Image (cartoon, rainbow, N blue to C red; front, side):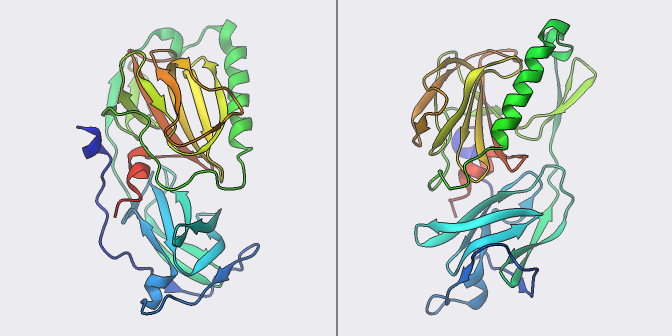
Length: 293
């Protein structure tokens, strides 16, 4: 599958909100402006991609009339100016049950249907040290877990990302998000990103504007970069052989940040690319296609 094919998921034609109300009061300031002239009243409130929404999906909400805080799946989201609309990014946890989940916008609610997507499974063999790390590295692993958790809990509240997210490398991907893996015949895990085909030294670029929150070697991830895009949205880049940025640096979309490698828990050179939103890992190829309608 080529990258061009991989990035596209079906997006329906007109995406129209189903509106009901009232909803529980939202926090903070919000505004609902008058609908644009000639607009259908439901279309004027909110639309979203992808449709249908599925477990593991990132979701782009857009409105021409609403801005300010909203609530969905127990998470706060913020509609902010984005070109000629107001937008908010959100997502659905991989383990979310199918059903109807209301999006609260001020004193109105929008019914969002979530369906179940089935993900494949596979087996993989890796050196036993990655299944049962030596006792002497357990302290290192614990420290790295604490570093990551601290970063994920301290995202910039303002929006740093701008417009569409872009692929981190100009290659196809070989292993999909959500793949359930059995390691060495017994350890089950879920693949929480995309593995891009990338020979040693392939240039890796930033998926969007943000700040470099992590740029260091870690036991499992190898050469590891995390970009904070604000609003608790992060992109992660693993198994790098070289860093081209330092922690704390501001980065622009498409800027070179590193080179691919085979460091960490891997069986060969590639780039593992992941997306995290408010504690949930989301399907990256869907994120890259959200602005294509």
